Figure (cartoon, rainbow over the protein chains, first blue to last red):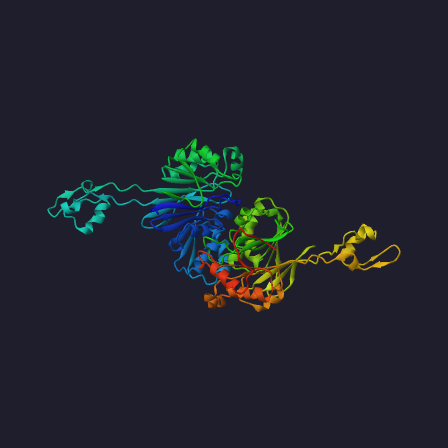
Length: 305
Length: 305
């Protein structure tokens, strides 16, 4: 598995079909797993994709429509049965806690781990999670209920030491970390070696943006600009654009316009309406006409970021 | 489709596996569908098996462990999105209503149909549903929470008219229904023709019994005696008999002993523990040693009753 990727557990819309599960994905960043949305059946898909439950510590819910969150009680129950002890944090609209806690309390007596709800404000762009190498931001979206997308962004990385400089300047090990962060080096004889002579540029930070469900919204471009990978909902084809407007969803063409304007590297479209029974190739074509680097989402696929 | 059959949507136990969905089945009786248990993902399986949502009016929940009922909110939401108008009745322990109504109210604003909860008493054997041709009874089981199985039993059927008697005795059409129910016929000249000369025996009533989850319980034999088909849980093999006892489950051997003692025609075993990862052939063999007419349950299978 790559050190930054996203695994697709489900990419259908609200109505079940024989081809798609409702929304759920798992971002893998250096073997830590972050679930985005938690549609019914996602725990089954999680198992099928051989992901490891004990690496999952955070779940991010874009909104509280059933097809994005009804897999949560079953997943929590399973984690309890497996004897999990480390806390699990659900980042979601504040209603999530009052909605799911009674169910969890009923079904999982004496849950052996702590289930923590972190209330997010979907209408604000903000940092909602960080650790030493990753930030997660909300992306305000426009749907029928409070909804946000999520941006997973690596933190600034260390610069790379140039070959042989450590030996050449006799740099003590304890100074290497500072130099990688940009410090100059002062030799024993007082000479200052500028950082540019010691290091080369750090790897670029990588970014993954998830935007579902939402009306076509140019406003989001500022938040996802030049992302390496964008998942954007494309519930409908352009022949249903009016329906997309009415239900606060996006067409494949509109998703591609967002990808194009935001200059992302690659676009995955998903959240397909059940009316596309046999395949979504028409949606793909529509998007590719505008943004050629588009691919269709599919259960079981893993996209490198 | 046969006029009395059961379709398997899920037959795994509480922990998800890559091979099984949690418990759910659909009994088809003359094109009316009755769901038994409603584990997570059952609506997806329902679609895959090409069953018709509009033929489903009753759901029976054996107990309120998550793996037997957490598919309910998603299913109800889907029925709402599909514009259902006829009522849906959930026959379940009284807690089901307080557990699921808040979730349904949150996720399904203005549900276009009435969701009715019919509280059943799992500890009592009783008739909980009937229509003109079918009775459904509870079968008290012994599990960690109040639990019952269900017996689907055809009502007594009409006797068959013997060939040519209608013409021979000039029986008026309006009397045929009574004669089929056992009445004698009085001819115009006053002669009484006994029913035995006019009819032959009715078809035998068919019965399907569902028993999951439960400790091995000889007491249930009286309720399921000579059923045409018995689904009985067999969570474990005999090497885990102690574990079965502790968790109030049954081994394959015990399920077969029940089938044998109850003189049922055929046994389906299911609710397999996740520890049987690759196949359940050991469980099958164990059961067949005692009751040869045993088959393994499997998602997608349809069993004729």
